[in-house]
Image 1 (tube, helix red, strand yellow):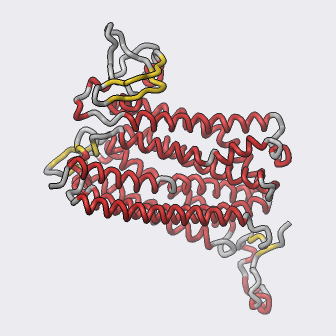
Image 2 (cartoon, one colour):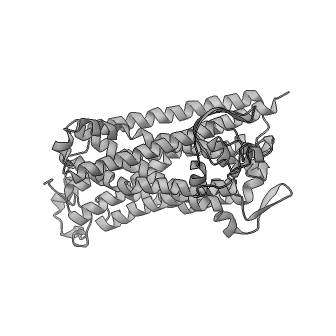
Image 3 (tube, rainbow, N blue to C red):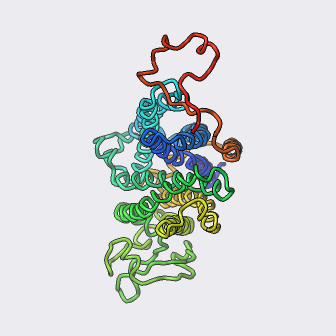
Length: 483
């Protein structure tokens, strides 16, 4: 007989692997799309060919990442039905429709314009090409919005009621604009911008560190890091806002994230100490050791010096989430976010001191190394933030309404293991392929030889004015030599 707990654990492990491997791609797609729109706009605005070459270079990296995201996203869609069939059926009236909206209003929308963006150089006008790039950026944001909305509804399932095993939608407005979504989506969108900017910054720093195309990449290094001076602190602010939402609507998850077991001290006073480090003991319902700072938990969650923050002792054991992983993954995410913010401020300090030129930055080798290595921190933050979000919601797959044990598919342990092995193999294949092509493109660098394509303009659309012999020689139609 199949062990239910083992079956649930394997299904969660399998889906956890799939989402962990998929989530590294869409945020970079959104962040790079936003950067491509900016860099192409700068090219049109300044008419400096350097911005054109930078756009075409980072566009190649975008295409690789986009393809990897599509491939791993398909397996995630499959996994819903394979691993969590009862959940997919019960939540279909809302969850299925939201994924359908994502396909129609975002994925198909993006697919149309991405073709123009990639293959439209020299075939459509410069402004029309910029419009295509804008739509790729906007549609990728729409995709993230729908996906985060579906997941946020699982955190705060408003606007529905359960009827005959189905979640029937009473109010689409309440369901779509559920409380968690209103802070989770901005938090994730800013994370996408942050991961894209640090990716651009790290590639640019690598080029300057290796003394390759320094005049070109000092533009993107300066632009990305100065943007991060605003984006990185804004992400910290939105993280605080999301934390307060979790505290209000899922206090058990918040208590698990903070290793907060006891609502009151022995003397009856509110326990508002924040555990900087601890080792949770779920069997005993306490921490084996902890390094705590008084009042900080209250300041973080209620912005008050003294308040009552519910501990895990306020919830039945069957309703308590795991503690160890959310506790430490949350702290890793926070440390990564703070480190990224400090790095952005370091860049601002150097800029104010007049050190932000390629020649002078090459003398600040540790700064360049830090920027290069910083490209890993946004991924770590996204991973650990997602683990915190998903694991702290347990034992619910739809908070307060449907347990994970009720939503998991009934299949044999052997089938679970086979699916897990298959997904691991496929995702690793995509991951290695993506980074192989990333390294090839970065090693080759930007194309500095091909003439700049200035696109079709109303003045150059009269092909009849062009000599036939020139058109027949296979020469580029509308180009000018590189300055």
